[in-house]
Image (cartoon, rainbow, N blue to C red; front, side, top):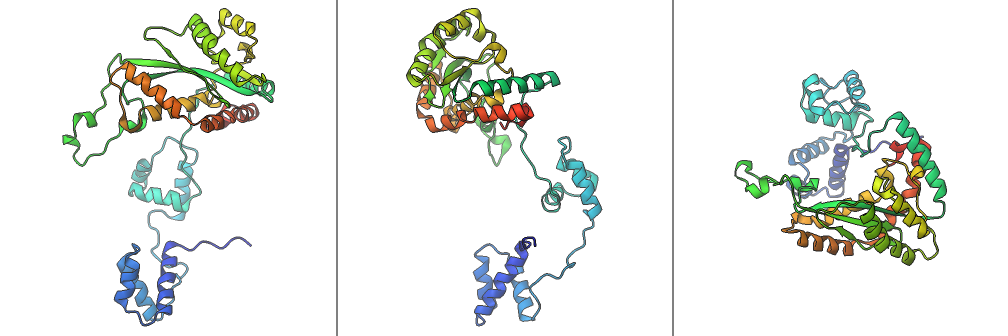
Length: 352
């Protein structure tokens, strides 16, 4: 037998009031109303239940009773469910106009009378069929080659002076939109806003020291080799992985696979993912994207903004020190699982 159908809120409300009256027959109606109204129960509902009990009527709802649906009949519910199933081009307001009702009625119908659930879209790059096949193949190869190894992943990220880069900071609350202060009502974005670039590497064993790219300096093959790899990454790997149980997975940018960079990595005996083995356009499997998202939230927490680049740089350094290693470890330990998911079902199978 299946599990019993859960009682509705109305049914549970009737039972609770009836039980109290049964255990305390001397209670007056006003005392009963006062008792349940403190819990937020509507007074008209309490009076109606008390009246039913006093009149000896059943507290159970009679099957088939209640108002008959005039808008969302069973046939129209099926039409509504079919219109919304696996469809991102229809809104509740558009559906409400078609069914001649309020959009809240559409919302309640979808929630209570259909099997549909609302989900948030996940981020993913667009792929052609050829790209999906290539990513799936390379993910399988990378998953096989990384067996028993920790991934070490690096990337660059920009931090502007203003807080506008955080979507949650673009909202504000006001009781009078017209008279809200300009600094609250608008976010001011300069055409060429100053910003700093951070390079960092992460692994299950921690974070590398950061490298802040000076203003006006591009991360070409020589900057990447001398400033990022030689001064930071190689010492970080030697310190954290004396056992050699790691695999360096760089982004597939052209500067990362320049001849001078590849030669340097080979000279230092750094085990890294070759260019031909590196699946292109797969941020879903690289947790450093999520790491930078977390760092963004910490840097611009509570609407913080920097007045100059020095202040911004110090703020980023401070937030890096507060990052919990367990959080990074948890993100990095999911890399091989995501690669397996991609190898088995393609890039869209990876949660992001």
